[in-house]
Length: 191
Image (cartoon, rainbow, N blue to C red):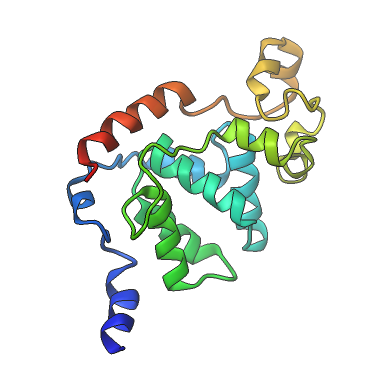
């Protein structure tokens, strides 16, 4: 029993459960990490979740998975960075759950999600927040957008009127190319 407690308290929050991830080359771009932490990625569902986390210390599990997938797969930033941020900001933080969940999403944990499972934040937003109510609450600068573009505000960026009236970032990565890059990198270390 003490060995299990030791593992989850001292090792699991820092060490990959799957050793093949020890050689994974994570991105160390602090600007991308800060954009994710501040909810300024240009992807409304991710940004809404991250802003909710900073504001009230909580977010729904679905949004946690979307934000975690975006960080570890689209940005290729270490799950440890995400786990540390969630640990510091969640009011319901639990060391074992936090570490295990981050490793599950990143693919480095026990019984982890397959490396090719990468949540698309646009599709996830359209599926789980079809009217954009969640996004409008936490990303108020997008509240005037119509439902059909609330999860893809760059479609409205084509209008100069939108560009001049709303201060919201362009996406920090392109979903297609960041997904392809993640698949290529993850494929190199798959067991």
